[in-house]
Amino acid sequence: MEKFILALDQGTTSSRALIFDHSGNIRSVAQKEFTQYFPNPGWVEHDPNEIWSSQVAVAAEAIAGMGIDGSQLACIGITNQRETTIVWDRTTGEPVYNAIVWQDRRTSSYCDELNSMGYAGEIRQKTGLVIDAYFSGTKIKWILDNVKGARERAEKGELAFGTVDSWLVWKLTQGRTHITDVSNASRTLLFNIQTLEWDAQLLELMNIPASMLPRVASSSEIYDYTNTTFLATKVPISGIAGDQQAALFGQMCMEEGMVKNTYGTGCFMLMNTGNKPFISKNKLLTTIAWQINGETTYALEGSIFMGGAVVQWLRDGLGIIKSSSEVEALAAKANDNGGLYFVPSFTGMGAPYWDQYARGMMIGLSRGTDRSHIARAALEGIAFQTMDVLRVMELDTDMNIKQLRVDGGACSNNLMMQFQADMLGCSVIRPEITETTAMGAAFLAGLATGFWKNMDELKQQWQLDRQFDPMMESKQADKMKAEWADAVNRAKSWVKE
Image (cartoon, rainbow, N blue to C red; front, side):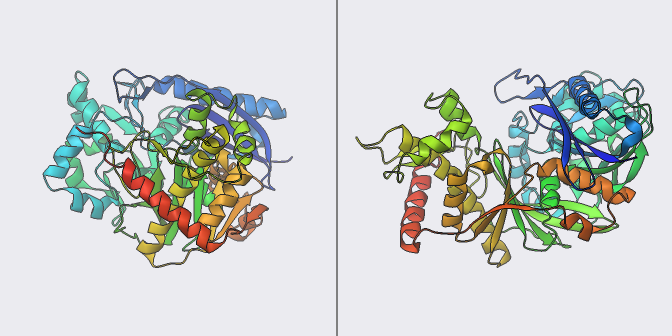
C-alpha cells in the first residue's frame, strides 16, 4: 500500500494542506482562508479556534481528494506563520484571547522602553533578534497584563503559551503534547540560541512564568501520534519548522553559504550559516534554521516588508492591472524603466535599513511615463530590495554568493527573475516545485520516520526548472544600482513623529 506525507502549512491569511508522495510530487492540495481582525490601528488578530477548524477542514479535504484514509499517511509535518502568539487554558483548551499576529504593532512602545533601558545588546547576543513588536515575547506579556485574571492563572500554572505549531500539535493530540521546535522557539525573544534553552533572565525581564512555555524539541523527530476525530488512525507527527526555515530546508540549502529568497507578500531571504550562530553587524536577524539528530543549523535572515504586495497594490490601489498575473506582460511592454524608480516602503523599510518612518515613493516621472513603466519599476523595486539584503549578507559573512534559490508566488515572473540575476550578478535558480515551505515540512517529517532514508535521498527530490544568469552590461547595472540607492535615501524618514 503506497504511503504519503501530509504537510500542514498554516499561514497568515489561509490554512493549507498538501499531500506528497515518495518522489516529492504534490498529489493533493486544499486551501481555506480565515478571518483577519483589526480591532485597533496597528493591531492584527486571528481566532485560534478558526485557525484550527480551517486547518482540519483542509487536511480532511486533501485526504478525501485522493480517496485515501489515515492508514496511508506515513506521518504529518507542520509549518506555520511564525511569532504569532496564542495563550490558552491547559484544562479546557480554550484560548484566553485571540491570537496576536506577527504583524501586530501594539507592543511597540514597550519595545522602545526595553531599548531605552539598554537591553538591545544583551537580547541580540542571546536571541539573535532585534527588540521589536514582531516577536512573541512582548505579545505574551501584553496578554498577561491586559486580559483579566490571565496573570494570576498563568502564575498558578493554568495557562499555556504557544506559537501556531504548538497550538496545532496540542489540538491534534487533544492536549497531550505541549511542544515547539527550535526554529519557532528562536522567534520568541525568549529563547537563548547559544544554550538552546528558554532564558530565565529574559522571562524575568518580561515577567512571563516559565510554566507557560512548551518543551523545545528538534525539527525532525516523532513528537507524538494524532488523537483526533478527523483521523481514525494514529499518525505520527514528526516534523515542525517555521515557514521560512521550512522553505530553506525545502530548497535543499544544506551547505553553509547557500541562500534562498521567498517572494511572498513580503520577501524573506535566509542564508545557511552552519553550526554556529552568526551575529550580524548589519541588522540582519540570526535564527535557528533547524535541528536534526542533535545537530543545530543556524541562518541569517533579512526580512523585506513589501514584495508581492506591491503587485497587489498595482491591482487594487492603482487599478492598472485586473489580476496579478498581468503584471509581467504589462511591464514587458516597456523596454526599460524610463528612468522611473519605485521604492515600495509602504509600511517602512525592513532589512537592512529598519526605517519605520520611510514611505513608498516613485521618482523619475516624466511626460513619457506610462502604465508599463510603473509596472516595470514596481517589479524592479522588489528585485532591488532583494539585492540590498544579499549584499549585506555578503558583507556580514565575507562570502561571495554565486547562486540564489527562489520560491514563492512571484518567482514565476520571468522578467523579474532575469532582472534579479542582472542586479545580483549571480545565478537565480528556480526549482520545479516552488511549494518549498510545505515541502520542507514534509521532508523533516519523512526523515524522522524513515520515509526517506537520508539527506542524499532528499537532495534527489529537488529539480531545476530554470536558471537565470546575468545578461545586462555591468556599466548599465552599476548605473541603475546607484540611482536606486539615491531613490532609497530620498524615501527614508518621510514620516515625522
